[in-house]
Image 1 (cartoon, helix red, strand yellow):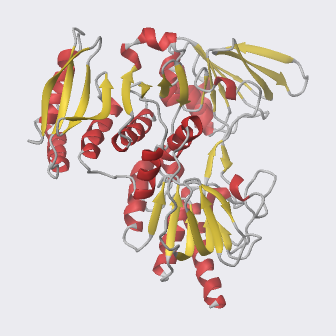
Image 2 (spheres, helix red, strand yellow; image 1 turned 180 degrees about the horizontal axis):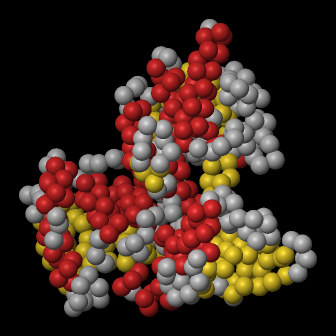
Image 3 (tube, rainbow, N blue to C red; image 1 turned 90 degrees about the vertical axis):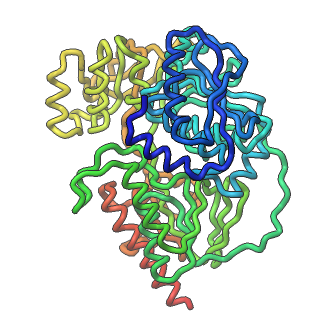
Amino acid sequence: MLAQDIKTQLQQHFSKLTDDITLAVDHSHHDQQNELRELLESVASCSSSIRIEDSNRSSKIPSFSLRKNKQEVGIRFQGIPSGHEFTSLILAILNSGGLGKLPDDGLIDRMRRLKLPEHLSTYVSLSCENCPEVVQNLNLIAIYNEDFSHTMIDGGLVQEDVDRLNIVGVPSVIDGNERIHSGKGSLADILATLENTYGLEQGEASDQPTELYDVAVVGGGPAGISAAIYTARKGLKTIVLADKIGGQLQETKGIENMISVVYTEGPQLSSQLESHMKQYPIKTLENRRVNSISSDAVKTISLDSGEVIETKSVIIASGAKWRQLGVPGELDYIGSGVAYCPHCDGPFYKGQETIVVGGGNSGIEAAIDLAGICKSVTVIEYSKELKADQVLIDKANSLSNVTIITNAATQEIIGDGSKANGLRYEDRDSGEAFTIDAKGIFVQIGLSPNSSFVRDLVKTNAYGEIEVDTHARTSIPGIYAAGDVTTIPYKQIIVSMGHGSTAGLAAFEDLALRA
């Protein structure tokens, strides 16, 4: 079932397995049961450490669980983990055997101390690009928290459950009948959600002495990694604190404006940046978020994990996130009609009316994509003219089921209490109000800087961007900022890389003068 080149890669990945991994398959009369068997047999054929056996359970749909040395590891799949979820299966095997990119000791401690329910389920679509990250993160937690188990469920095979739970966006993490998370989520996101929802057992304070760093870089995107490489090359003791390496790059498709690189993609460039950074003695704490930074000569950084970092200087390169509308109903219906990823959630609205808010490149691209599967797409743009590239505007105008409304201010997302069913907007000239019926509203209005943790510390502008001088210095000595979180114009990858190197060099020069 698997191509030979994939099998060859799996054989290499599985060659270091020392534990016995069992794929325990449930009995099912579903017409895709043989397809599941064939997939698992192909995977198992790549290693003598992997075998298949019957689980002695029955299931309505093709299902299986993982066992390590005959013991359940807390990971279960209901559905066939193909498409994007194939990676979730492979990582579940590797991680169960102690291989792959595993969490550091600090994260493992957080996972073990989570007060979790016995079980959570994540409903996915096999075409969703954001689902695997959430599935893989919860699988990791199941490996390290022995009182917890997690199941991936292919929503396409259990439509009655999808309807009963009002699932109109994926991934959706469900506890019993209650949705606790919807949409994309890094490990930091998932840990924060679980800690806020269920709580954390009190841990023992570490008696390890606190290290003092020359530079702490907050952020793992192009600006942050560039800054870290420059400071490490100058001999400065450097630590990187990041939600995830790559940042917004991980969600970027084709990149064609990186000078000297004709074409690349975000995940590939993220991997290359991480590989480059690993050539230097840079400590990295991933899946962390900064709660606060002090303005003292030796700065104290408090993390959401409870860890504390002391450093002589800080470079803030925390980037930006998708901007929200900030109108009534938006937060109420996230995952129930309001979405931010047309690629992932678009298939849920096949044959239905949809709305895209935003007339920039991302908004018009979303409209074009949705037009291929939806009954209609209405674009709502605040300005009098669309801001997208003309080639995209021309394409959208050529589609019979795309309607574009400009000079329109979105006022409210309307719903019935469980699902969104429309949007209200006002004409900015006449003030006249209009309502559009739609089952899905996709918000595509740009980025918002991730600066909330320092807005009371350094000077920011009206948009929350950190104000910097020509050397990336902020209003506080010893604190620098670089990339999309700052006031520099043109939020571009190559600009962020250059700005990160500026911040790194400025930090080095200032530390040299203080020595």
